[in-house]
Image (tube, rainbow, N blue to C red; front, side, top):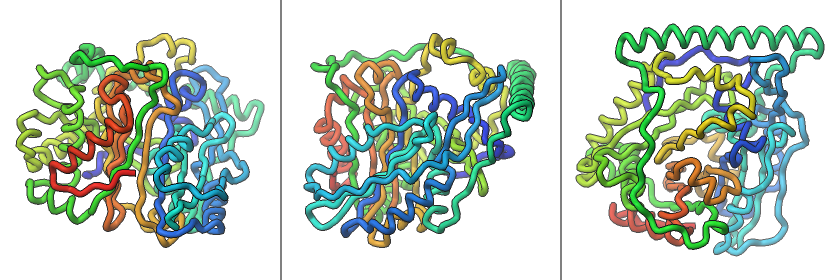
Amino acid sequence: MPAATRAPIDNSGRLQFADDLFARRHRGLGSPIANQWIWRMNSPYDAERLRYIAAGLAEGGLSRLLHRAKFPGARDLWTNSDRDPSIELYDEVLPVAEITGWLQERHSDHLDPHEGLTYRLTAINLDDGTSVVSMLLAHAVGDGGSVLDAVSRASRGEPLRLPPAPAKGWTRVRAEAADSRAQWRAVRDWTKARRQAKKDGTAALATKAPRVYPEATPNPAPETWRMPRMIAEFDTEAMTKIAAEHGGSTNAWFINVVADLLVRIDHVPVDRGDVPVSLPMSDFQPGDVRSNSTRVAMVEVPRDVLEARDLAAIKKLSKAAYIRLGQAGPGLVPVPLAMMQMLPDAVLDKLPQPPAAACMASNLPQLPDDYRYAMGEDVRLVAGLAGYQNATAQDAYDVGGGIISWLIQSGPRTTLNLVAAEPDRVPDLDFLENLVVEELGSWGLSVEVW
């Protein structure tokens, strides 16, 4: 992906806007969001290696503790939690057929940045002589860029420490007062930029029309529904060849696939010509201690382009979306993020919850070797699942539904990883698996689901 225009790094350890939103979920403002990174090994897990990685993670940037600010307007602060390594190595052997259920259970494991419990490293051997390693991570403390860096550093024995917390007393008060002033300056700068953007006609609308969904058959048992998560793997070379044959890149192919899935489940109204897909793009930089530095571009794919599978057109559309994101100024944001971050939980909880993206499509085309082989040299592939922990059907309705998807290339094998927040349109895992196998099969891909 093309790089966005890069702003100076805020390495103060103060929570960024996304950190703050994710952390509030751990305080009860919605279901917590956690990312689950998965290594599928060709042999039993290496306990010594995993303990080494866990120790490195405990020293690095993913092991964080959230300190609540007391001065009005100041942001909360991250420091290293310095907890013991969070690792659990299972002694029992799991049948391969039960791997999906085991991963789903691990995604429900408790995390809380306010306690310094931000990740869990677990592993279990399978009955075919292989193993699987899961690293569950609170999204508040790490997005794609930060987790790739932290795990790679742990594998090299080079953890990156966060700034120490200011001393208590007047030193801490002065530090928080300075941050509060900086936040108010950011609001002032947004006001000026917003005024100019309105004059230029480039300002985003403060409100959007509510989504209108086609009618769907209600889920027969919403009280027991849980978000289905699945991993499909296939040959990387075959995927790359298919993308080239249709005139585009693997990223354009990925966008086409997930947009097709939105159309297949009737998520996007039939009277809307374009299908929206959100494209996360990392702004992570060397030496970055930010938890979340991801920015999101939006591409709108016309239905005729999807039907024609014109990947050359999708490639052009996505490139333009990345360019727009890189050129976006502060005045294009309809609400000052600094002000939103200053609101107390009680106030923010009363505001209407913005809908989630119809589809979040995150592409990781090349994993660093330090990351890919972090849990052992005998790795078959790397997968990943995101989503809301223990989310109910009502939670899915509250965010407007949608799909969260990752495409992760691990050398000869690639995984398409999906989570569906659609109680009515994707009622269970079998439905999701059949949907994805049918879609990928229509491209001529042979797929293995687990």
